[in-house]
Length: 127
Image 1 (tube, helix red, strand yellow):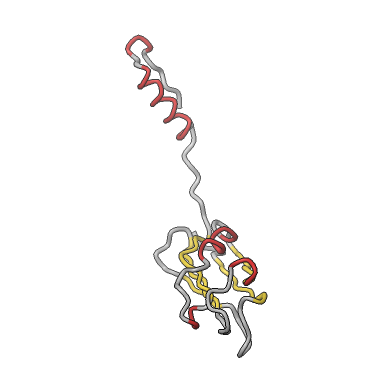
Image 2 (spheres, one colour):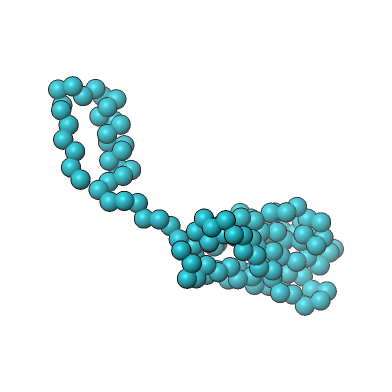
C-alpha cells in the first residue's frame, strides 16, 4: 500500500499521525496471536488462599504457547498458607475463546503441590 501525501497542506500533527499509523499498520495486516491466555492460577485454594495468587507467574511462563508444562515451585511463588498441604489450579482460554479451560496439579494425598508438581495447559489444534 502506498500513500501519496499533498505536502503543501500537511501540518506537523498530520505528519506525525501518518507516521504513527504507518509504523503501526505497515503494508501487511497484523498476525493474530494464537495460544494460551492465562485467566487465573491459584496455589492453595483448598487452604483458603486468595484466588489467582499465582496468575502472574503462570502467565509469564505460558501465555501464547500452545502447550505449557508449568512446574509449581513454592520457592518462586511463595507460600500463601504455611502449614497446609496446598493444591494448584490453572485456568486459561485458548486464543480468546470464551471457554475457560482448567487443570489441577496432580499430587499424592497429604503432599504439597509446591514441591515440583506439574500442571499442563494446552491449546493444541485450536484457533
